[in-house]
Image 1: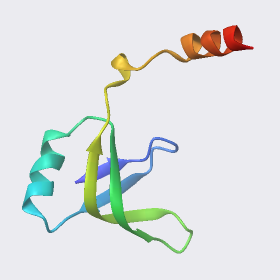
Image 2: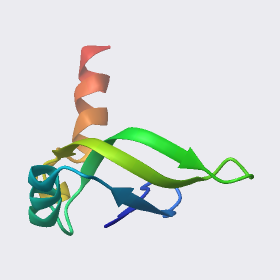
Image 3: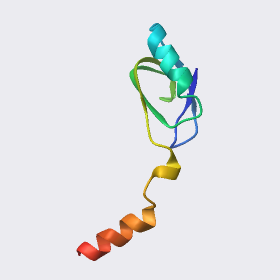
Image 4: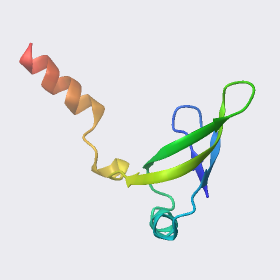
Length: 78
């Protein structure tokens, strides 16, 4: 499995030895996720792989509150 970092688009290999976690990852294909586990880095300090222990699926971007609405709400509170 490959996970793309949202900040720079870097592809990170996601590895697990847990069959249920692997099944969960397959269901999350193409979705926004957070992966927790032990990360391996290259000699430049960039992550290359993660031994996944937990995968959390986030809501789709279409369900998120737009940034402009958040800014508007914050301005009203000031």
